[in-house]
Amino acid sequence: MARKKKTMDGNSAAAHVSYAFTEVAAIYPITPSSPMAEETDAMAAKGVKNLFGQTVKVAELESEAGAAGAVHGSLSAGALTTTYTASQGLLLMIPNMYKIAGELIPSVIHVSARCVSTHALNIFGDHSDVMACRQTGYAMLCSANVQEVMDLGAVAHLATLKSRVPFLHFFDGFRTSHEVQKIETWDYEDLRDMLDMQDVADFRARALNPEHPVLRGSAENSDIFFQHREACNKYYADAVSATEAYMNKVNEKIGTNYQLFNYYGAEDADRVIIAMGSVCDTIKETVDFLNARGEKVGMVSVHLYRPFSAKHLVKVIPKTVKHISVIDRTKEPGALGEPLYLDVVAALKGTELDSVPVYGGRYGLGSKDTLPAHVIAVFANMNAPEPKKTFVLSINDDVTDLSLPITETPDTTPKGTTSCKFWGLGSDGTVGANKDSIKIIGDHTDMYAQGYFFYDSKKSGGITVSHLRFGSSPITSTYLINKANFVACHNPSYVTKYDMVQDLVPGGTFLLNCIWSPEELDSQLPASMKRYIAE
Image (cartoon, rainbow, N blue to C red; front, side, top):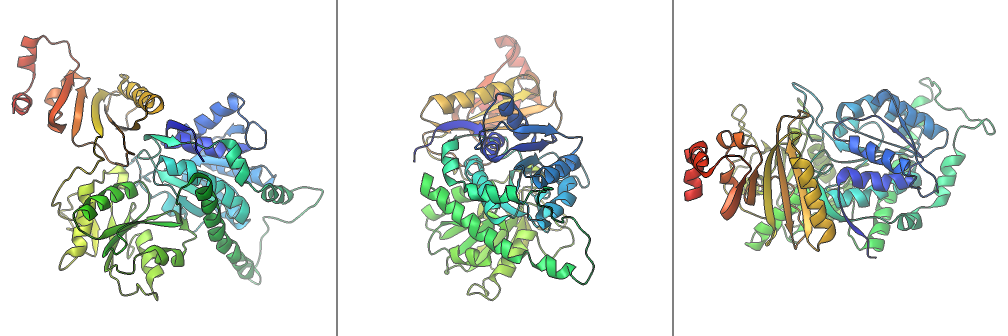
């Protein structure tokens, strides 16, 4: 089935797909999830209809705790309700999440996963917020890129109605939520084809209603609480099969290959990385690079993280594997290992892969960039005579010596990809102009396009760097541009502060937006910049 292509970011994709299944959206803004709620509100204001012929009712509460309470109440009254959040906002929802899951009320929370403040505030992406929700009872479905947000967002809404288990659909904050990509979008009629209206009718029949009163939210003593708590087990088994079934429906409809765990790489791989989120596309790029030169490596992308299906994981891992590395985008101080690592170790226990050594690593905390060079280091570590069992990526750990050595920094982007970097000042219009540029390229040419915009926590006045890629092949490089064909500097004061021309490939173009004359330019540019350009 051919779908309409459109250039958008992950937040827009989540808003587009969730609006179809939503009757009420209870919202409260928090970076980087705010655009999801904003776009839902904008669609409602335009009178866009959901699958039930209704305009979504949007209510902004006083906090994320209030939004979660409104979600619980609205669901209990029989309205399909959605919310969007991240980080501390998600943590405020946890008490209500326990109740919603305990009462088996289907719903979806879309989360642009973001760092939780610890020693310092950080507004950027990692998985520390969603990992705090593991025992709430919510199913957890992860999307690795903007296209998956569009496709698996639908799976979350469909599977929750079928299984009655509420879903937390998450994707990496900023790296996916704000990355602009050319993707295929859902037509609401295609979503309607997959929706079982009997599931909707059953949900509404369970709503609190004085015409058929039920007891909910009671207090139980020790004589029966345990028994009732265990009674939910079959619903979580059903959630696994429901998610798989709807992934298969999506695959059948649009020709994809979504699985609970997707394997990518050599069929006879001897080393495999298991990961979750946007880093998976970077690992795939690196796997292609290494396999092309004769190595045998692969990777597993985790989609359904909760409930965790051990048999589905074991099924996709090649039986030739000799080493496995699991990388987590979170840190749990004092634990024996990070969450995904411990889940994988437990899943392999007692299987034919029981004897395979498993190593655990951390990466990407607070949106720390993870490059193909770091992925190569993970594969190299597995080949070492004495591999590090615990390691960190992207940083120089000179305290506990957990870093892996970088041996090479290859360019793994698809051939023919044009890369551009634009250095600007917050609120000077550079980011907005580049968003428009990449959308024009994506929507009005046959080329694939990707835009990512790096900036700090300041609303204005801080440094911004826009990273644009476009080309004839799909772009899966979920990391910052290190070598560009074109570099532009929109603030002349940067020439003495940052190394910009060093980002250029040989023969690349450097554009400096300034008011200096040629004579003044010669005196204003630092010697190191002029030397690099001359060489």
